[in-house]
Structures are given as C-alpha cells and as structure tokens.
Image: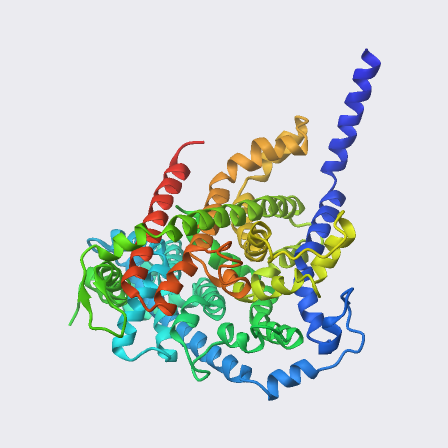
Length: 290
Length: 290
C-alpha cells in the first residue's frame, strides 16, 4: 500500500515539476502561437502567390513562384491607394481632434475641480455603454438631412464620438497621478496656469497622451460599421470598405485581397512592434480602476 | 482679468464635453423619436405611434436574431476566455525571462488585423475548395472530404465565431495579463516555499486576485460581440438561410435594404436595452466581494 502511495506521490511531484518548468511554458505558448499566428502568416505569404496557385488542392503554404503581381495590381490598377489615402485622412484628423480635445477636457476635470466635474467624468465613461450600432440609425437620419452622407467629415465626426470618451478617461487617470507638488511649486515660482500646463504638465504626461493617440489611431483605422453605412463612393471610402473591391459574388481575388490585408494591418503591426507599451497602457487604462 | 480656478476648469473641459454629449444625447433622443415614425426617405415622414414596435415584436426574426446573437456572443467570449487565460497566465509566469518581450508581441499580433478583414481571411482559410484550415482538418480528423463549413447552419455559426474570437483572444489577453502582472510576486514565492503546485498557485492566487481584470475583459469582449457586424458581414451576411442572422445584420437590413428607419430604431432600442441590463449585472458582479 505504502509503495503504491509513494509512487503516486512521486508521479504527482514529477508532474508538478514539469508544469512548473519555464520550458513547459515556452513550449505551450509556442504551440498556441503557431495556431494563433498562422492566418496572419498565410495572408502575408499568399500576397506573393500567383492567382493560379491559390486555386490548387492541396493548398500550398510558401509561394512556389513568388511575384509582386498582386501588389502591383493593387497599387496601380485599383482604388485601394485612394482608400488608403481616405483612411489616413480620416484617421489622422480624428486623432488630432481627439488628442487636443481630450487633453484639455481631462486636465480641466482632473486638476481644476468644480461642482459636478466628478459626475461628468463618470458620465463620459458611462456613454461607452450606448451601442454605436443603435446610433447608426439616428446618425443616418441626421446626416442625411445635413448632406453629410458619403463625406469623409461624417466619419471623422463619428470616430471622434467613438474615441473621445475613452481617451479622456485615460488622461484623467494620468493627470490624477501627476505629482501635485510640481504644480504647486510652479505656482509659487510665479508661473501662470497656462504656463504650468504647457511647460510642466504636458511634457511629463506625453506618454499617456501618446497612448491615447495610438489607440484612437488603431480603432479608427480598423472601424467598419460606420464606414460601411456612411460611404457610398470611392471618393470617401476608407480601406475597411474599399477592400471589398476584390470580393465578388462568385469569385474572390484572394492574392489581391491578401495584398490589401498586408496594407490594412501594417500600421497596427508597426505600433505593436515599436510602441507596444503604449497600446497596452491605452487599452487597459479605463479597466484597472473601476 | 483673472478667473477663478473653478472657472478655469470649466473653460478647459466644458467645450469638449458639450460637444460629445451633443453627439451622443441628441442621437439617443432621435433614436427614441424615430421609433415612433414612418421614416423611409420616400414617403413623407408620418407619426405612427407604436406601429413599428408592433411590427418588430410580431416579427419572428426578432427572436431568432436575439438567439443567434446570444449564441455568437457566448461562443466568442467563451472561446476567447479559454485561450486568453492560458496565454496570459503563460506570459505572466515568464515574467521578465528572456524572449518575454517577443512572446508578448506575438501574443497580441492578430489584434492588428481589422475584424472585417479577419472575416475575409477566415472565409478563405475555411473554404472547402482552396482553404488551408480545411485541408488541415481533412488531414488530422476522421473527415475524408473537405467540410463545407458555410453550407450548414450549425458549422456556419462556428466559422463566424472563429473569425471574431481570433481578434478577441489577443484583446482579452491584454486585459487579463495587465491584471495578473499587478499581483505581488511575494505571494507566489511564499506559496512555492509552502509547496503549492503551479495549478494550486493559479487556482488560489492568480485567479482570485486577477478576477476583476478577467471579468472586465470578458465583459468588454461580450459587449463588442453583441453589437458587431464586421466579421459576419464579410463572411455570411447572416446566412446560410438565416443561420448567422446577428441582430446587427437585422438592423442594417431594415435600415439600408428596406430603408425603414423607424423599425430599425426599434431594434436599436432593444440592443441598447440588452446591453444596459448586461452592463449593470456585470458591474454588480465585479463590485461583489469574491
């Protein structure tokens, strides 16, 4: 009996040891990543295939005759460059408006409290619960009356509405954590409120502001619902809608679609590689303190 | 002229807040108003009372769309939770070990892909004629023929859930990992000295202490999947038949195809109601002591 029991114990301890070892963690995560990243890798590889190669069974992984046909067709023979331009115009305008407006709002709410400013901060956060898809309908009616349908301006306005509350909330948190002593000593040294804000607070909170700018960029660049509903012509269509140029009722041009996919995911990939800390900070800021 | 600190705060914050509330509150009232009118851009706008409510609530599609949406939300949130918990716990255990930065980047990379594009990519990967994933399924499962995933209702649902969960896994991982990284390392050391296995440490330290971060990640993911259209639009547009008829597609159909804004507004109100109830329940759950 005791022999069996000690054997069981030994096995359990061995299992624990294996589970505990960092090697196990590396291997398990590695295997998950193979599955998780394969669609992305396949998309990148397929962009370099010839259209004929996407029709074969069994499907190939690495292109047999890699070429740039898909990229040149997309860049020189389609409306995708215009769609990328539209996406950039909409995204950069949205980021500019959101960053300036949210910084001012958050600083006022955080450092110069007035009656009701706390409630206003929470009200801003609460607006996140209103589903954007429900507001599609009134926006469609209102923008229809104002002649804003099929205008890039409409998408800028809508993306500002989507991002301004989260970024404000993120920055309120950042300004709240700003050392009060620095502001007080600037005041004693005779700096005006504007000077304190511009010369002392802003340079030291630039990380949080960048995080806000980056998540606004990501969300706006990837936004689809409003882009679909409020654009009709190629003049105003961003990339998330423009991509459907290669999706027909019967045939989908997969190599070209994958080439567009490379363009569409590139900005975010660059942010993840070089500014991952900001992305994580931006996304989780509203979450940590509830 | 010298203004008081309180007025300085108002001056900084109120313009932005007024603007964003205008962009949110006005449409919310419009949403309520529209639901009482016949509004279709063709015939004159006409007050119809509760007629739109009557026709939506007597439409059998409503119940079907709500069930579909519930299943979709559960599927995406559940699948994402399993993977995100595993990945986050693995990354958390790696801590600052070598390669941890690379691993953290790899884990969030799929989030770079716009959701609408994920739909297209997965539609291609799962295609019975040319899809790599379908080929893998044929090789590793008893299935001998490629499976036409979008040919039958049940598997079509699985297909759209996969495309959405692929983007939501990294998204949820970010929230869960942030919560886990906030846990004091001393607790783990003490537990290890006391002989607690890794499973026990996960069960009795990580899970309870990261509980609110996990709940928040699930909440955000579920909320997004409840009000989305992106992946479904690019994969099935609600089909085959009405197998993936998400409530978001229901709204767009009424609004864009049938041009019936009044009825679409009623569905919008229903979505708003569901999400509010869900949010209140979730916040109550997070507030409750574990």
